[in-house]
Length: 347
Length: 245
Image (cartoon, rainbow over all chains, first blue to last red; front, side, top):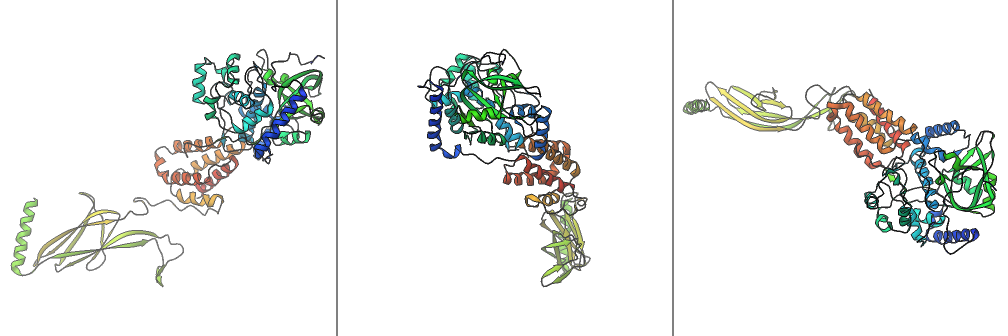
């Protein structure tokens, strides 16, 4: 069945060693979660949702409306434009690094939520798209998580080790001097090599733990909350608390129509399967009140395109509810981050 | 010149001695506290009761008691070769020295029959609580109790009489608004931004605001970290204190 998306699938990377079917992969995700949550229960518990600053909330809702997101929308794919007046369009994944490549985008969204919408006394880890001042954490987290999963050689990762790494390792900022030293040594000196090196060979070396020992001492900003999301209600609750999610599944997407508001509507493509990670970046409410989950696949942005909307799918809530009921997905959220504390240098 | 004067003194002294009379002078110093700015003072049960509109200012003074048989006495207090202190005769043999600083108090006693004598003593008086020269500006009007341990009141007191209070208040109001309304600003950039604008605005007057800056630094450190909304409220309290008339 044609996807109607207008492009071929990109690199995928939801891989669980030693198993071959989607169901087995989902089962292993569940087993990992059971072990990890027994080991570190508080990290997997939902923390209370927090209020937004009132004036900011008003501005945010007006901004969403200006973009055709009606009352009740929580579309975190817009937060970069709301805060920085521009979209951060990161480069597509070149290897099977989707579990990191689509997840770090959610991490950035959550950091912006905490600082800009909730008013936390924290600082951005960076403010640019690329370079050592990138707003995104560096991709060594792919190596950290693969080491936890004991994965070396080949591409890929699965979701629950990624969740555990974010909770226990934290992330490495692109501004870390040691990272710069390693990148220079590896010849990765272009601005676009941060937050993900454009050399597939280098990215694979990083994925095979080459920089783990050198960079782990510099990891910071641990995630404090990564709830396992198993129902549509829990998914909506996470969205309304402004906690984006990352999803591993065999679900492929196709376009199924166009809404009267002008955006594409998507659903699962039963004729295809993507062993892939995508993000759940929020909820879009249309002018007629219909609700769509924003499934974000911008790690496939191809051919130098900046048309990110082609890679963000508007899937009706009922459709996504069916995915949860059928146990087709493994989803974890990105909740509170222990960010960089604000410390003014003069008072 | 000094040598000649000494010779004269010796001669006079010898003459005096010859006459059996001595113009010897002795000086005792009693450091006291003077309370100015009070009205309708009375002492009741060991306390000085004053009218409610009094604005007491306490300074250190010295009462100099001169003991001599000489008919004429002159008391001068010198801070430097050309700078003299304030000395007032307050009794037959008492003089009041006021004004902070270190003085060489020169007491000269002269009598046509007894001769002349002089004593120089070292007297040091503590810092005046109010700076010399023009007095402080009008007291700021009442600031209502507010959050952060009555920050507005403390700011009003710390900034009393300082130049450009209204302009500095506007800086804090502006950053309070940004913290509430602008998603991009962070708490660190707001605090730093306000400090830089304040310093730039004050230019040569910045050092006069040192006490204000110290109060703010110590107070913020105790309360850090502060979320954006809370910091906005904090900045508004600062502005209230600075805006008090």
